[in-house]
Structures are given as C-alpha cells and as structure tokens.
Image (cartoon, rainbow, N blue to C red; front, side):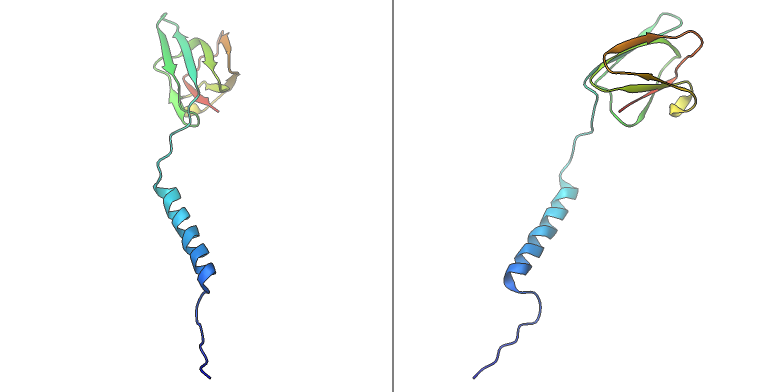
Length: 113
C-alpha cells in the first residue's frame, strides 16, 4: 500500500485564495473616477465679477479667486464656504439648490460633500 501525503493547501482552497489575491490586485489597478457634485456653483465678488464651477469635486478644498459676497449652490451636494484660505476659519453652510448673500462674512474657499 502506498501512502501519499499532501503538504500545503488543498486544491479548492488554493483556487479560492488565488481568486481572492487576483481580485485584490485588480482593485488597485482599476482606475476610479473622482466624485463630483453635479451641477453649477456660482459666486459673485464685491467688484461684480461672477465665477462658475461646473461639476466641482467633492472632498478637496477649492479656493475662490476673489472673496465672495454671494453664492449659489446649484449642485446636488451640500457645500460649506470658509472665510479663510484652504477651508479654514469660520464656515457657513450652503445647502444644495440654494443661494445666499452675506454682509460682513466673505468666503475665500469652498468644500463640497
């Protein structure tokens, strides 16, 4: 009688482990699109110059070219406007589908999401 010993992983378990490793490897290789707020974000500076962002990204801070006196968030995502650069300082919420004008508050940056 011949006795055979198997060392290592049985056949089915090895295939499952190989499939799992392949899936993990592919998940890091497949490019993903950055999330974006769909729609337009408009703002007006004190000098009357209007600016528009179309489909702005969600997550990162976006600097405004000039201090805003009013803004309209016509995207599908809530936003926060910040008095300081790099989304610092006092913040004011601007819910999706709304607009707002300010007295002394002058936002310099915005973040969606």
